[in-house]
Amino acid sequence: MTDPVGGATPDAAIVGTGPNGLSAAVTLARAGLRVVLYEKEETIGGGLRTESLFDSDVAHDVCSAVHPMAAASAFFRRFDLPARGVRLLQPDIPYAHPLSRGRAAAAWRSLETTAERLGVDGTRWTKLMAPLADRSRGVVDLLLSGQRSLPPDPVAALRLAPRVLAHATARGGRFATEEAEALLAGVAAHAVGRMPSLTSAAVAMLLGHTAHSTGWPLPEGGSARIAEAMAADIAAHGGVFRTGHRVRDLAELGGVPIVLLDVGPREFLALAGRRLPARYRRALERFRYGPGAAKADFLVSAPIPWRNPLVGRAGTVHLGGTRDDVVRQENATAAGHPAGAPFVLVVDPAVTDPSRAAGGRRPVWAYAHVPNGDTRDPVELVRRRIEEYAPGFTDTIVASRGIPAADYETYNPNYTGGDIGAGAMTLRQSVARPTVRWNPYTTPLRGVYLCSAATPPGPSVHGMCGHLAALAALRRHHGLRTPPDLSPADTRSRSDA
Ligand SMILES: Cc1cc2nc3c(=O)[nH]c(=O)nc-3n(C[C@H](O)[C@H](O)[C@H](O)COP(=O)(O)OP(=O)(O)OC[C@H]3O[C@@H](n4cnc5c(N)ncnc54)[C@H](O)[C@@H]3O)c2cc1C
Image (cartoon, rainbow, N blue to C red; front, side, top):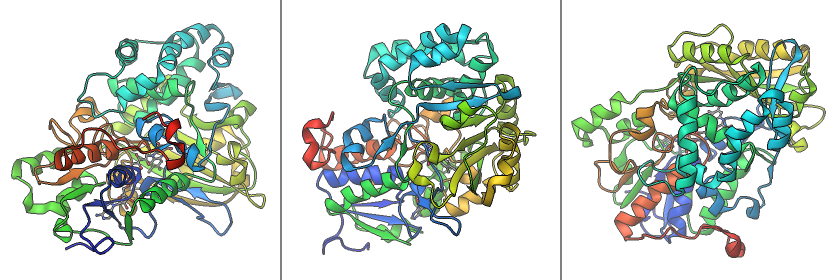
């Protein structure tokens, strides 16, 4: 029997406090349920932790750092982070992509500036992104859905579909210049898998257009500010946290009518064991994992000395060379062969949020795409990659820490073999996530739901997996058809729920 909440058996237990566990808890607590959350680590947040890793006042984002989806998703629009004091700071240049000989391409918040700077490809870029940016909410709500309902905005769907199809093939959607091609390939590579594909094209359209609509912000002070705002709302509505508690068997939660699991298929198998029907167990065992991420954190004494100063103004930097290089690296990685120089994402958070620098020191966040289960220490891989485009970077390093892909699952069992997407984002697994079911959040066990990024719409900090799973539970157990109000009490009129 689980711990009581306020002297009574909880109405719902949530295992795992990543953004999806937290969004599930917010949704249930706002509907009036007594919730208890279990987290194996001493701190909550999952992919939303910010910690001082080295002996300094500088805080580092352990997992996520940049939040286009927290600025755009339906859950976060209703939850309204800015009204809760979380400042989402927007870089003028959401992302940049350096190339050889000091060249670089950049996506500005302003579509006009981006087009102007892309020269002959400017009109093409505008034609690709403007129609999506004009219907941004519809595009986001379509892609960040449970993938089971009709598009909420048919116009957005009609604009999105041909673009995704065109960019899913090797010849489709090409540009005239290396700059524009590399710029788009860098966003497509966020899909972490084979390229080009329908998923890489969908990710390119989703992330690509939000750069020009809701932006790619960084929360002032780090990603943990998002988790803290969510935790405060849960606590204000009676929710209780049990940290440092790894749930090892669902039997521990006996008596709680609703259980939401912010865990991947492997952890679910371990928690439920023989209670699951053999067929469902086999389906979970067949779930495939994608390439890994190998994280490198640096404490440095100066901004990254990019050869092209424009890159130094970007919130996120993609290092992968030309489009063809990126495609080659991503396909080799997806096939399990380490690419010579991997695709690397770099963020110098103090560029967007000066409060992140302290005492002449600042953090540098980076990760490389590597094969699943890769055991190499990423510090050297990433350092070399940055040095290629920013000579002198090495001399600024005060301290560093690497987490090989193979070690990520010790930190968080959801990241199997370092797959931070909680399951390969193939076309099949975008829908059958983690198995083929009409309602992907339900399981064969009554009252037990999955709500992690291993359910639709998949990875990233959007809170939609947890929110949609909680709504499914509220419908089934309480007959609630209208989502609860999620806005902060004093800003109800501003909510767009
Ligand atoms: C290096 C890295 C960089 C990333 N960068 C970005 C980014 O910039 N922007 C972005 O949007 N996304 C990013 N992501 C992805 C994002 O962090 C994830 O998609 C997101 O956190 C998934 O949320 P979740 O709630 O499903 O799971 P998680 O955030 O993985 O949380 C799961 C939680 O459950 C806990 N848990 C698991 N099993 C148990 C158990 N049995 N008992 C108790 N607790 C348990 C874990 O400890 C963890 O706290 C990044 C991820 C990583 C690792």
